[in-house]
Length: 161
Image (cartoon, rainbow, N blue to C red; front, side, top):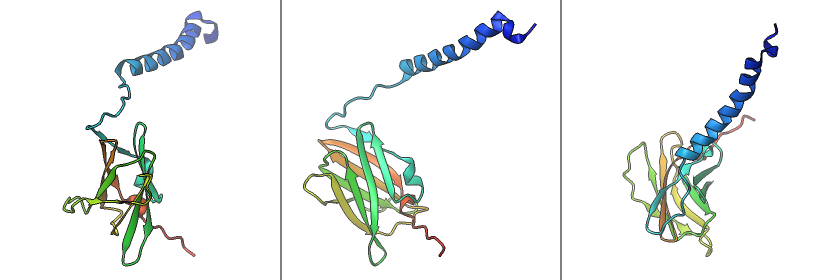
């Protein structure tokens, strides 16, 4: 007798994936949180995207429909122009460079690049990509968004010639 002629094995083979999918989506519907509209006066955490953790040149921060993109440009005297681009108009952006895990620096306000409130920049000291982090706080429509970002995206990798 072949295993594929057994009606119990065939029924189990068909039902197992169906029950697995029903269980997966059913549990997700029961325990997942519904996204909520940001309320004025509240603070929300921004999560760093994976491109912040390697030498990508850009770093993304996101919370549901609010997103910031950090990039940089090297300046003279071991300085860096840090740029923030937002999808939503911002009232202001404050940033602090945390050296070696010690939060001693005062937050510095970024300057708006355009009148739209979407582009911001700040001249900072060259960070150590392996040890330093950036603390970011952005304000939009009286709502605060804050995040902690690795500076590995600023690491310059040279290619052998």
